[in-house]
Image (cartoon, helix red, strand yellow):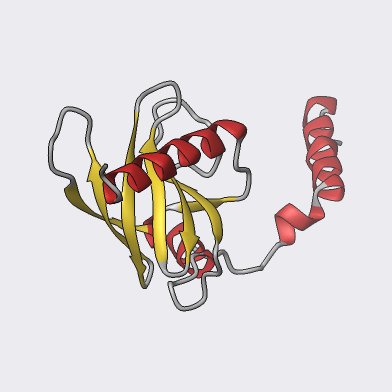
Length: 150
């Protein structure tokens, strides 16, 4: 006869196995995150005009994470690089494949700096906040002012 202390743990394990059979018997292959991000990142040939948000975090608005918000219109992009609760910098340029090829206007710098950002290494996010739209409007106004000096 088995001691009562040994029977209870076995019953407990059987109860867990009965409640969570999917997790115990799952045989579905797991796609590595890098492949999932790459598959979710359309390239310039398939990306329609619109507003997009990418990050090195799978969640929006995470402090100490990096984000890029941009609008694509007729092959050109305008947007901002930022971290929540911090500064942001504006950029303008093109999307080539899955790579942003842009010039970033850094504060206190006279000339813009060339920057290439690979979107396939970032998470595409669906939630674009009012703050993202605000930064985007400011960058659109700034790049328009730079392109059309008075």
